[in-house]
Image 1 (spheres, rainbow, N blue to C red):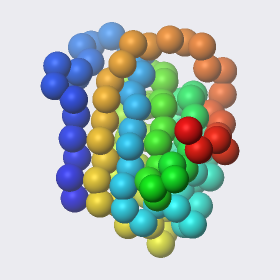
Image 2 (cartoon, rainbow, N blue to C red; image 1 turned 120 degrees about the vertical axis):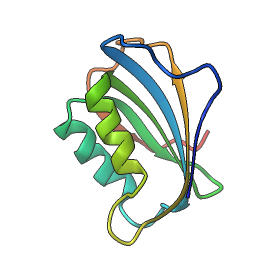
Image 3 (cartoon, helix red, strand yellow; image 1 turned 90 degrees about the vertical axis):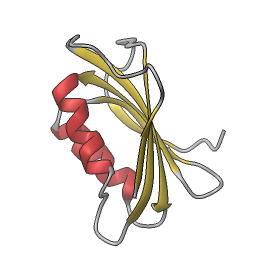
Image 4 (cartoon, helix red, strand yellow; image 1 turned 90 degrees about the horizontal axis):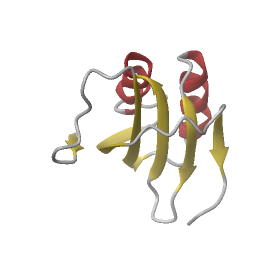
Length: 108
């Protein structure tokens, strides 16, 4: 498995963070998005998750640093029947604009 984080993108000790994930492997057709939504909601994380046309899953997570890290940790394993080969992480600016965690169905 490969886990990558963009250079100069590791958050400091601020409470709220935003991270975009790109998850590769056998992650479509195994209820990855539904399960991520459940894990995110359980951990009070907001944002979204969607399938990409090439077979990967993309997600944007926002919330308390510890809570977001729980969802990131789960994403490196995924649900039963998934096989996670790589997780790319890119920390960004926390926006606070999301109120819940949704499954997006757009492909772009």
